[in-house]
Image (cartoon, rainbow, N blue to C red; front, side):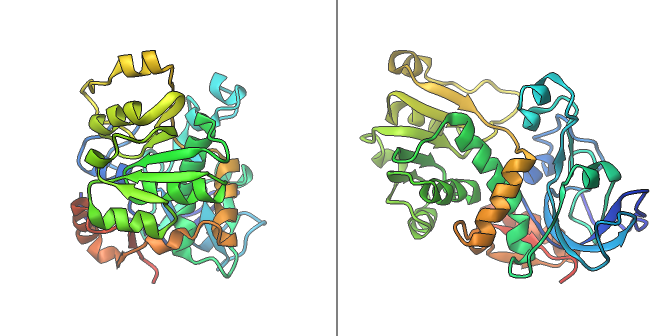
Length: 324
């Protein structure tokens, strides 16, 4: 992976190009970068699916040059069995930026007619920063996870892992009326971050054994945390395996804990356009101030340094700012 010069994209009929102002690094980007995640990825590719910017050129009459916009980066076909069942996030023909279409770690991104006509390019209010808008995508994925598991107001929620995704789970659960939120995280700094965004308690894994949560969200792809989730969830409680786990290995999971506890276990992947719109509204209203997660900013020329820092875990959220 490196920085390369490419021809400027030219919008096709009904399409447009976006000049990127902020593109956030996601854990999925890191897994693709390291070759851990390859399924569904076209290589070589420009990574980046959390981004916002301004319209640079357009052949779509509904937008104007210079208009502030954000892109919902995953487009479903609308016709496959999953789309027809209302699960467009797991569409069999999903087109997703950073996997197929070239993504946001660039100065310019091309947006074809299909994305424009499907409503995936959303106008951005002046009081929402580009960095905040870029985080609508991960928040939308978090919304999907909590909806898939059936999380209800008043529940005692345990969030295992306090990276950006775990913290978004805390903030969303709080905004949606969780009764109590417990965070399990080894790092003391991340535990402090969890308390700062609304968790009621933050525990190290060895301190969490006494929890009896109504629901547990595994926000880091650790089999140990998945097993802990099964142990700290009350009988007939909810467990959501939100994080992706290492490919090519079969994690050991305490199936008896699920069996005897009659737990309801779900996975979660991706987002829908409806959830993306809701995420943007939550950010714009201030109910989920996602922008506070951005701790480091890099120009495009320092993209490799940004990835190196993100990999150390020192950055809560690193953002590349090509058009700053």
